[in-house]
Length: 354
Image (cartoon, rainbow, N blue to C red):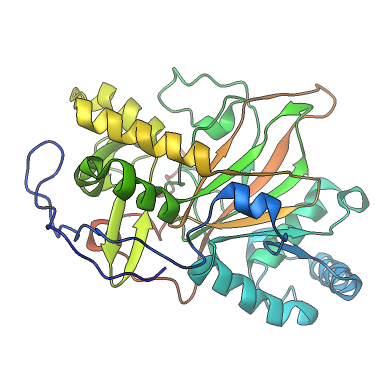
């Protein structure tokens, strides 16, 4: 994704106050593997799928057995504990794809029927240790999260969408270089995973509605949903797009931006609302739907790819359940100043039990 920066500097945030360390606004089209449209990938070779070979599946079983015999807790397991020699070259290629390629990878071939839920969690953790270091996903300090309907209501300001069966809307997660998911069970109906290239969205904005980019390079306030660090307000602020050291990065959640208004009392401007709606519409237009079978693993760049999930209906005897991990990855990009002092790479601060 290489292109020279051009255009005016963004010097004020969306509320009118001067923003710290503003980003240059990229005004030229991006090219490269990071710019993709779902329709093209769906109709072309599925080279974004890594199919696990029999020798790799045997390596996974040996690593699982060794870790279980060691008695180590899941979060204490390291990449050395979960040795996967047949995948060493593939991990390097996957890591490069996540940082410098399309920004996502789907790993298939695990037969989830051969493992109970705890063993599948251990496999997911073990594989993920070869890509990065896990960081906290919530105020409880969970390093391995659960994406499932917990019957919670978004009217509760502490609920996050992944804890419901509602559509998530296209977004990036609060923290992490890479977001990983492991399918334990799909839904009876719905729950379709969708992903979209943020670079393709940026290109389309330049072509169709460049007047929105100024707003998107300035700061929005986002709702912590009750999980803010101690002593901090219930919201944080950051831009949707930033151009830094020759890389475009994107962090986006219209849901958190919308709900932050109840805390700040500051409504969005018409331009801000329209800009956010356009990002969501373009993500929908360019999205790739990815089927999840039990045992599938998905890793996505939290700066290059927006992800979504459709609403779903569970079978009481077969409830949709995915494991989630947030990873800080070695060799990842330098973060723009707007994010480098945030919790992007540190995760959500864990709180002491009350």
